[in-house]
Structure formats: structure tokens, C-alpha cells
Length: 327
Image (cartoon, rainbow, N blue to C red; front, top):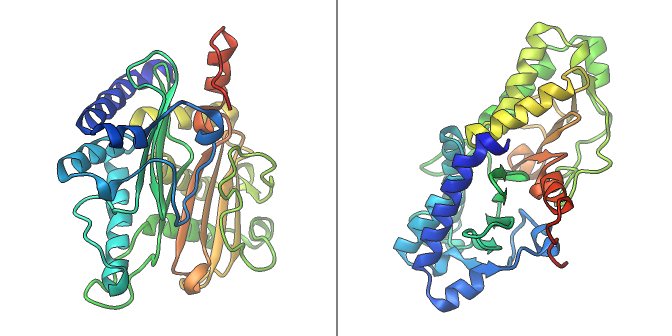
């Protein structure tokens, strides 16, 4: 990962430095903090305050620089997904006038935080997060980790007003539904979890992916067509990130073996019915939940079992004589 992601690490350093250079002293104090493990491992996709600076308090020029930094964590296709998510938030406010507020680029209730020194040799990180978005990167030397990565949409499909029919993140739902519908009866008995779908992703905001249930239909029991749909679904999540990050995550999954990558589904099979699915393997967990608001409120997340928030890359860094941060 280190060699492949070195150009990305440099691009993130430049983007972070360009943004920080535009901030006044009060803004810099709000944005910057030490690379403290305790804070970095506290993340959320729910509404509410976060450490850092509200993007709504930036000037238009500063917000452009924040947008530049944000986009370093996404591939071109990921930026398209991001634009749909942000546009959904804008439409939601337009449909609820009491909540309306101008957002020429990023939603004003997103928060910016930079931990550590982008211009230094030690690990550092940045995060832009708010309702239904957690975009972040941990940079350890030339290695870059963008997981956990969370996107959501409320509503997933606009059902009224001039934007009726607009959808965010449709392929995440469509690919998984295609897969579950082409399973044979005996396969579906293994893949389907009895009872109602959970009301959210199971990993929530956990700082690490531990104890995730290893259940569902393994890839080893799928035919070629089913396996291709499973792999397309995994790529749909991983390839939101820049190519170097996505390729490294894909290679890790392949090296660990596809046979025990599992697919599980809970809830209804028809559009409009609340449902949940997960794809989990030795190196990753993908989760999708669409149960709220009559199956029209999406949460989806990519978790990296090894590298979430720096994970074992940080452990290796500190194991060779570097002092870990307090926390």
C-alpha cells in the first residue's frame, strides 16, 4: 500500500496545507488538534456537533479548499456518489423550509478537523463529517487509509416535489437485490437472516470491527454469475475511494481468499420493504441498512478489519521506535 498510495499522501498533504493556509488564527485553533488516539477513534454519522470547525463558518474561497481536500478521499465515481448524497441533503432542506439554509458547496453543518501536522513525519489525519457523511483519511508515512467510510441518504429516493424520482446510492441496493433474487432456495436459506431487519448498520460507530457475526452464504457456495454479482457489490463500496486505496483493499481481500466472503440479507425482498445486508470477509465488512421511513432511508459503510483509522499501520509505525500519541 505504501508505494502505491504515496502520490495520494502527497496530494492530501498539499490540499490540507492549502486549506490551513487560508484560515485565520481562530479558525486554525478550531480545526487543528494533536493526533490523539482517543479523539480520532470517536466518529459518528448522526446529526450533532463534532470537534472542529463548522464548514458554514468558512468563506467561499476557504470552502473551495475544503472541497479540494474532501475530494482527495474519493475516486471520480465516488465524487459522483458524494454529490448525490450532498444534493439529497439540499433537497431535504428545500422540502422542509424551516430547515432551509444555503449550501453552495458543502452543507454548512458539516465539520472539519485535522489532527497532527500534515507537513511533519508523524501520522496525521483529517475528517469532514456530518449527517450521512463520514469522509476521512489517516496518513501514516506514504500509506493512506480512508476507512471507515460512511455515506447515507434521507430519503434515498425523492417522492414529492420538483425533484421527484431523484435517487442516491441506487446501485448499492440494486446489486444486492439482484444477488439475493438469483440465489437458489437452499442458498437463500443460508443467506437470509430470519426476523426483521436491524434498524441500523450493526457496526454503528464502533472504533474497531470486532465480533461481527460470521454468518450468511459464503462465496464458495455461489456459482459464477452469483459470484460476479458479489464481487461487483464489493467493488461498488471499495471503488468510492481513490484507485490506489481501492486496489490495495481489493488485493488484501483476494490474498485472504474469497471463499469465506459471506453475504447475508434480512428483511423484505421487494422495493419499498425495509431491508439490510452485509458482505463480510477476513479483511472487510460492508453494511447497508434501509429500514427507516418505510425503506427509504439508507445507511451504508465500508469497514476495514485491519486498517480502520490507521489500524495495524499505526501499530507497525509505533513498533519501530516511534512514540505513540497520548490518549
